[in-house]
Amino acid sequence: MRVVDVATITATVAELCQKANYELGKDVLEAFKEALGQEISLTGKDVLQQLLENARIAREEQVPMCQDTGFAVVFLEVGQEVAITGGDLCEAVNEGVRRGYQEGYLRKSIVDHPLRRKNTGDNTPAVIHTRIVPGDKLKIIVAPKGGGSENMSGLRMLKPAEGVEGVKKFVIEQVRAAGPNPCPPVVVGVGIGGTFEKAALLAKEALLRPLGQPHPDAEIACLERELLEAINNLGIGPQGLGGRTTALAVHVEVFPCHIASLPVAVNINCHASRHKEAIL
Image (cartoon, rainbow, N blue to C red; front, side, top):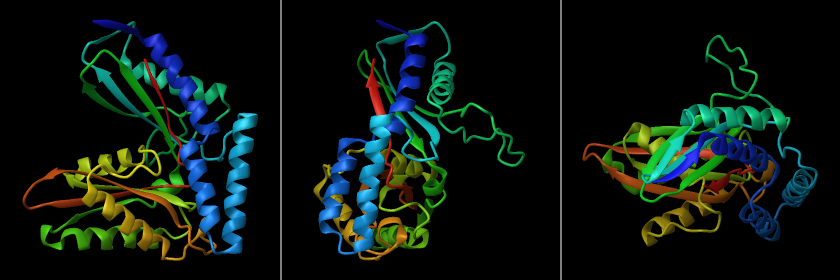
């Protein structure tokens, strides 16, 4: 049994919170450059160049790439051969978020109650998803999620008879209705199947896949390409100013579901598709 102390988890989460907000992944930067080469709108090209420049400044000066530094969504994959010592796992993660957002001068965006709405002052609590997996490693992914794009996400319980055409219609309608609000070009995560809550989690997890990496199932990969083309034909464009590049990618994840159900969730991410990971 391998031992991991909670102090290590806290320090790692604190570092990941800052890196995620300062440094866009290479896959996202490459997607910007590819979109710049394909964009037909001059305004759209200008926006994409500004996004690249913004990402460069954030990385070099270690400052947030966006004023909305997000809700800290943390995915934990805990090996079943790992023993966590020294304290409570969830509190260790929250302490890491607390330290990361304070030390990194990141905006604190979380309120303690959805109706009373007093800021917690330290961006906690995090939303933590924990999965037990084989092995003796602990994988931590921190994915700060901005409010603007999260607000444009949605879920619908389709009738099974609506099938894949119903799925396509809902996803495209959701992105069309979002328009410029989620700061396009966006990344669209789609979860199909499971239950009400599982579909939403699938859509969130879909955003973690590197851009340019299709789903391993050829049929689902084809669906991703069709959705991306249809979304980019909406003409919303970078920052909603018109153009071809409304989305950088569409990622679909699927899960078995009940014979009477066809849940579909769409989780939209803004152009700042942020997440960093570490393996302890």
